[in-house]
Each structure stands twice: as C-alpha cells, then as structure tokens.
Length: 345
Ligand SMILES: [Zn+2]
Image 1 (tube, rainbow, N blue to C red):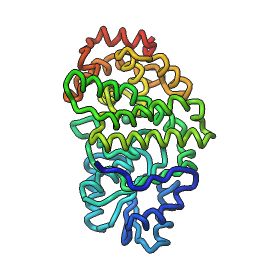
Image 2: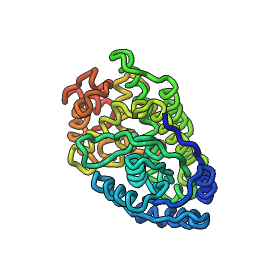
Image 3: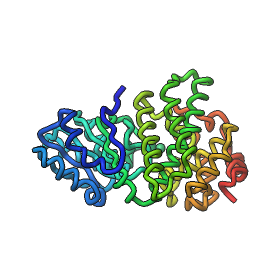
C-alpha cells in the first residue's frame, strides 16, 4: 500500500513546498512537469521556492498524455537524473508526472491547480491512445500540496467536474459490493467506506460549493484526496470507479464532442443509481444544485449517442463486474432508463 506522506491543503499552502521537500529528505535536482497555463499560475513559483533552497530545477511543458508524451518525459528523466518530479496542473500534467516517475522509479509530488477529478492523489494514471480507455496503475504521490488560492482561479467547470467524480463513488461502491456478493471479488470495507464518505460529504456540503467559498473548495479537495487514498488502500480503482465510470469511458469512445470526465460520471451516477434501485433523484438534485449537467443535452451529446454509450458501457471492461453486466440491458432498455431518469427527453 502506497500512501502520501504529506498532504497540505488550504490557502497559500504553495509557499510550503520547500519545507515539505526538506522534511521528505529531497534535495539535488527536481523536474517540474506542467502545462503552459499551470506553469504560469504555480509552476514558476514552485521553481523559485525550490531554487531558493539550493535545489536545481528544470521545467518540462506537456500538452497531452499519450504514450509518446510519457516517453519524452522519461527521456528527460534519464538525461537529467532528477531526484524527484513535481506534477503541476490539472489531471493530465499530474498523470504525466505520476506515470513517468513510476516507470523511472523516482518519487513525485502532486501540485493540483484544478479539482476536476480524483487523480490528484490516486495511484492511477489515465493515458490517451492505449487500447484501454480507463486508468492504469502507476504510483501514489509522495506529497500533495493543494493551494486553494490557486485552485479558486481555475474555471468553475472543473470544480463541477470534480463534484461529479466524487458523487460517482456512491454507485462505484455499490458495484463493488455487488461484485463481492455475486462474484466473490475481494471487497475492502475500509477503502469502500472512505470513498463513500467522500461522496456523502460532497452531497451534504453541496450548498457550500460556490466559487467564492474556500470552505466548499476544501470539502471537495479533501473528498478527492480521500478517494485517491481509498484507491491506494484497495490497490485498484475499484472503490472509485464502477458502472458510472464505464458509461463515461463509453461516451469517450463514441466519437462525439464529450464533456469533462466528472460531468459524464455525474450523469452516469444518476443512471447507475436508478439501476441499483437507490435514491437517484437525490443524486440528480444535488448535481443540479451544484450546476452540473444531468441531461444528454447539457453534456452536449445527442440522445441516441448517450443511449448507445450506456449499452456499450457493459462491454468495455468485462473483468469489472457492475450492475451493467448483471442486467445486460439492450438498447431499448437503456433508452427506457435514460428516459425515466430524465437524462434524455
Ligand atoms: Zn473518475
């Protein structure tokens, strides 16, 4: 089990990066992986703060996370031989740092600048262009430094996406329980409880999640970090990714303009909650309260493509048993579910 050793959350916490690296015994040289924007909002500051402590720092800008991008980062690691990596940005930059650091066997620090999904603290990374549309095992960050002053500057839509990804744990845990009961799959109560608690806390505090409310951002941030820890404890994405994630991956596979990961997962949670015969209406209401999409139209997907994605979802990861594999819904049944839940008109 790999767990982060330091998690620092709050306003202005970025300034503590030098203190954290010293405490962790990291010195010598570091490599920052960032995007153009995240380099401006946080990467440059990280570089300056570390240089002041005598650490030599290089920055590598990445745009996307394909296997080729990861190889470029790995080449840079081999050349420069940094003692540690720092991923500064939203999901993709942190995933690039996470995966390349893991392959090159060095630690990495996660410095999220957005809250769009649970990858900021998880041991899994999502890589585009592989035959699998879902995340693969990498390593957990050694430390997470999440500065809510920086995160508050990100587009509000990324926060909405993060809420959807947190709320998704309701049905992810239900699917895990189902796999345990029906397929005798290993079920970790501690990991499941942690993921479920994160979803519950976001639901209970939905009113606080507003752009000018630091407390609300903190709730979401801590929920997403806890989800990452739940995956580290479970040793897989099981506690955090069930049928609602399969639906989101299926939407990604259907070639249509798609929404953000957490936005898709939120709608997936409404559909999956209905199939699990649990309180889907409350989930839908909370998403609406946050301002998250709850319909195909709001996801910018055609009704027929959404139905197709729901039918496809059961087939893309056969080893992950969920309510979708149990019910084996045909296209007509998927359409009915989407209609009853008001996801399609
Ligand atoms: Zn997710």
